[in-house]
Every structure is written in structure tokens, then in C-alpha cells.
Length: 300
Image (tube, rainbow, N blue to C red; front, side):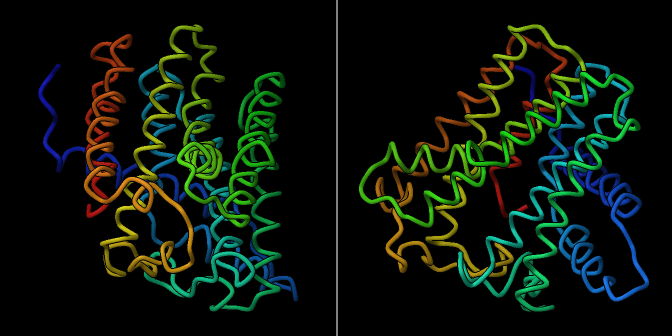
């Protein structure tokens, strides 16, 4: 395996990708002067605030691996980021996780109000599909239709929203149920980031299978790290409430079921397994391969 690139180089690539996406989102998201301006302000507050934008980074980085033009991948990645932003707005609401802080700032319902937060989430979701379906995203309508279809699956009842429902209902002492919940709630949108260039680039089946396996294992490892940080992290590190919040609510997660040390060991094993899925791509995947440890180290 090639030696890892200097972390600072990878950090720069992630920051550059985030900047590109932020500029693109700023142009794509609506502005308004009338009474509805409160809604568009809340949408922009949610989507343009601080964040690593890891899902768009994965899409853009994989697009480079397949030598794809940046524009269609970038627009599709912006649509995905709108879905992610909407999910966080709604997840923070009192009826769900009831969080006051997100990424070191007031959550949308605290900055504005609950009704505005609900509408902002709704409007970000519809903006995502407007962006994806627009001819500027891709000149082939069949490609756009497939992107829309796959994003709908990843964000709906068979994906992120379904995982949130399982989370609300709660799972107890069942690692398989926790894994399913996280595969849907967190993993589905991460996996779609890699689907974007696969769809646009009309990738071979073997490439698709390898990249999807990479995405699924990375998403699982990412969630276990999140559970670890919930148990032992702090608000400054996470940009949101921590200190065993899941355990306090009686929610089962990888740490409560496996224990802290076993959860950390599983992340280490998953990280190595994740990188192995990229062997089919050889040196073309070196940036993605190098990103695994960096992405899982949430202190960056």
C-alpha cells in the first residue's frame, strides 16, 4: 500500500472542496425580498453554515478518480448537501433530538423558530430535487432521472428518513437493529455521495460493487466514531451537545452495546477493511484511501 499523503495536504483538499461547494450552494439557493425572505434566510443559515461537507467531498474526489467533468458532480453534490442540511434541521427539532447547538451555532429552530425550521427543512429538500433535475446538472435526461431516483431512495423511507424513524422508536440490546438503523440514517446519504460519479460516469459493475462496499463500511465506521464521541467527547469537539446523550436517553448504540474499547477496536478493523475495497482502482484511489483515517478522526 502506498504511503499516506501528508495530512495537511488532505486537509487542504477537504477544505478546498468545502469552499467550492459553499460557493456553488450560495448561487443555487434562493433569495427573496418579500415576506418569504425569512424562509430563504433560514434555508441559507442551515446550508451555508460551517461544516466539512464530507459527502460532497467524497462525490468530487470520486469524480476526479473517474476523470469526470466537475460541473455535473458538483451540482449533484450540492443537491445531496441540501438533503443533509434539511435532515439536520429536522433532527434538531424538539420533537426529535431536541438540540440547541449544531456546528457551534444555534440550531435553526433556536435561531428562528420551530415553524420556520420545519419549512426551511421542507424547502431545502425540494431545492435538492430542483437542482438535481435541472438540465444544467447533466444533458442526459436519463442520467438526471437516475440521480433523482437514487437520491429519493437514499433520503426517504428506505434510507435516511427510515433510519430516523427507527431511532425515534428506539432499539434495545440488538446490535443488528442498531446497524440497520445507522446504515439507513447515516450510511444511505454517504453511500449516495459515491453513487453520483458512478451514475454520471456509467461505471462498470465491479467498480460499483467495490465503491459501494467502501461507502457502506466507511459510513458504519463514521457512525461508531460518532457514538464514541457522544460517550467521551465534548461540545467543543463535536460542535453540539455530547456527554453520553444517547445513554442518558436510553438509546442503544455501538458503545452502549459493545463497550468503549470494543467499539474503538471495531473502528480500527473497519478502517482497514474499508481501504481494502479500493484495491480494484489501484493508484487512482489513493486520495480516497488516504481520507479514511482523516475522516474518522473527528478532531480534525
